[in-house]
Length: 360
Figure: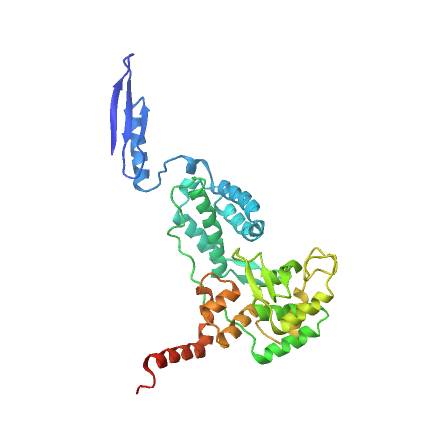
């Protein structure tokens, strides 16, 4: 509640001191020469506090969304340069949309309005085709700006309250589970083996055998491969944690053979023939192999789904699949639960037999 005190100076002139005390906020005060100015200021501050638009400091009024994005990008360029490539285009879009907005005015309604507009757009892919922006991609835009706000709120104190607290992400369709059946797998591996790209077959076998992502495989370095211990250590993973991939069977034999013809001028396992410092470009060869094998709706990342699906169908638990794929939680691998149904039944049957024997 605001309290206004009238004070008379030695020269006989009056001044008006406003004192505002409200739970959850520090005491605010200001002095004015006119009572009308004092009342206007008190009303403005109390209204802002009531509507939770008032901040302990004036940082939110000094900086715009564009200022926040620029500082955030400079920060992650130092901490995680790889992440900059992913989030910069999305943050530049936010900057173009609401970069003018001061942080004090960044509201849920404004953010939601821009999200709804983004969801109705289309984007052009690298191959020239145009497709609608998916809910999953919209959620990536939300996550990018939300994390910038988190840093601005928790570390820079540019924001008092997080504007994304009540912003809902778009509902995404159930996770894709596209895996190769036995016939498709045979056809694909045959075409990969006949490809002019000599490493394609080895790369695909490695993806099917370990469930590693495309960038994880193509960025492999020989010091991360231990053929004696039959393991590969991934240092630069999506969730920023090291992951150990077991090498076994055909994949292990192929890696041993590939090691015998490795290039001495490159530390990469799969270096480019033209530049040993860069990874081999296999996308064109991969697309051609998929086409020749007459496999529809199949991407390289689906080799990872195939590996997970084969693990599930061979009795691996969801926790074991998550460990192999490098997921921190089980939520990402629940899409494979139906494939391990036979294993689940056997576990339940075993439990019941131990508890009750052959009663009945």
